[in-house]
Length: 222
Ligand code: BG6
Ligand code: MG
Image 1: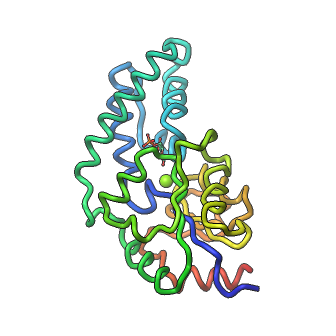
Image 2: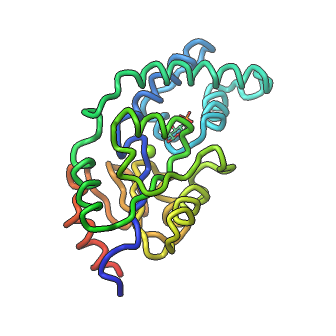
């Protein structure tokens, strides 16, 4: 048994910063414009899902799946991204969720490699805005991923980039699709927030996500 995981791989939106809510606000505005109502509960089903696929789910939710061609969909997705990117201007170093910066500092001290597995094309800009890019040894490139979570592709890409074995890593997620993706590649999963099925460890919020907690979890499970 290894006393430490080979790496810890983070989701971004909803784990490192509260951008999950900003995604919701931007999608809600686009949905309103085309006569579709979405709420926070529906938005949970979009977490970890790519921009294009999220739009398809919204159209389906509103019973308008067949009404928009490829070009119209591309325009709606671009419009949503413009709103979202505009809202990202409010991000500063203080927008990192409680406990996350401290955890990243400790993982550095413990020499544990850290990866990012976000399907967001905006992830690099967000890490820069939060001033935490330097804590990540490898960020999987969402542009090279063809399948959203719950497919494990993005987590496997992060493990490959770090040169680690998924079986010896921990993944951290706030979305059901993300927990399913982590479990599918044999990593140990940590779920943040309520209502996640199948997480190997479930924590109510990022404040509880400390190295002593992760270390105890790792040693109990391995
Ligand atoms: C994920 C979010 O991290 O990134 C999804 O959970 C989002 O809600 C996806 O749709 C893609 O993000 P972006 O920034 O490329 O539109
Ligand atoms: Mg998330």
